[in-house]
Figure 1 (cartoon, rainbow, N blue to C red):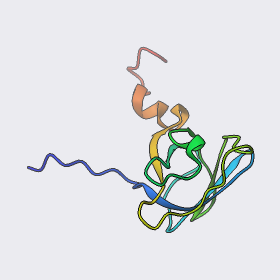
Figure 2: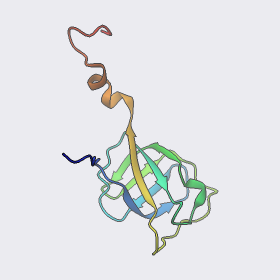
Figure 3: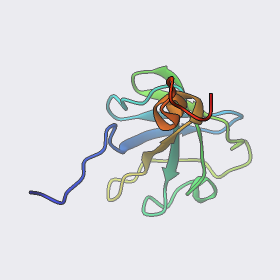
Length: 113
């Protein structure tokens, strides 16, 4: 039995980040995220727009390759791609309301109902 765990959606390489509020992120391929997922932006190895590195927010899907995050990046440094290291959009969680019934096991024997 393998101890490797695979998560979906996977981290997506970022091709552009638009400064603004909200921040719009475009990925190089389909990201597979759903509105309500929570994603973190990793630019630490990319070296551009360092102010956004490690910030996260609830995703609003705009298209199969673009999302917006409720981050005000208006005054951040400009983002540019780096051929040596890709910046990534990493899914880290979902908002509680999408998992609440599964987590609480809502049913006739649930003490919370």
